[in-house]
Length: 311
Image (tube, rainbow, N blue to C red; front, side, top):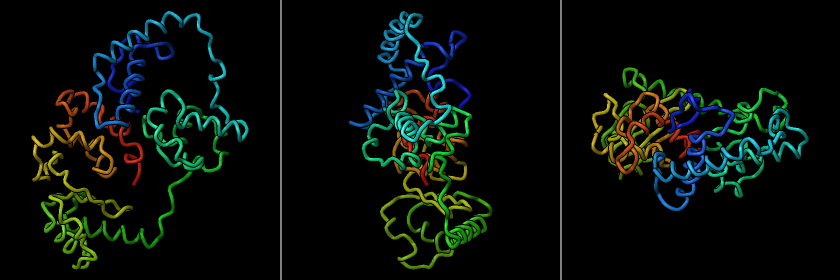
């Protein structure tokens, strides 16, 4: 996905993909600790924390010594090549969804709450991939397509809503000389845009009066989705079209866009990451800006899961 084996941890010529590597162990430790910490407090563990490196070194010594003589679990070599019986397929998908060492730290809070078929529509950590996407990475076999609901398409949007969204998109583009994103300072500007550009009725039923308490807004348009709205994050986005950008506030808060659920709509977040519009994002303690910038998309996927992939 990112053209490298691991987020955070660079590898060198000594790295062998099918053997034990200290970098892999460091990532597994960080992934487990980070997800455990996020259940109890709002914190973000520095992937370069010395305790992680120290613990990984201890585990690596143990595993390296045992590696040559440890029995190989050959049953896993082709485990996902075929779903097998319905019972076997369910067991494999249950394990992949939330009981492997890689996915369980992310999915533990949700495992008991999710019905079997709902597993197919919930993004699975640490990469926020749907189960069918994980399966496609693990095997080229088409046999899994026989599992009802696994390869679920996007839900059908009623034609009336599609037409309305396209109308909103056209009005937005025409009213902004082709811009897909606007930054608005305060509710007065928001209401004016909704009425004058999007041509919504000028009354409290159509102009979002519940937004009066917020300081600023971002509107973004897509032909399939109409318009999305974000509030009180303008200061964090270093877009030359954004007069409200504040580098000092961005240094203190932009990282929240990658980790805080519902702070930034997914489409806008991906746009900001892909276009490097949050260059001030760093860890909450004010360190590791370069690390965050190099791994921003992974951090967002890992932290937000559904709120990265959902609409």
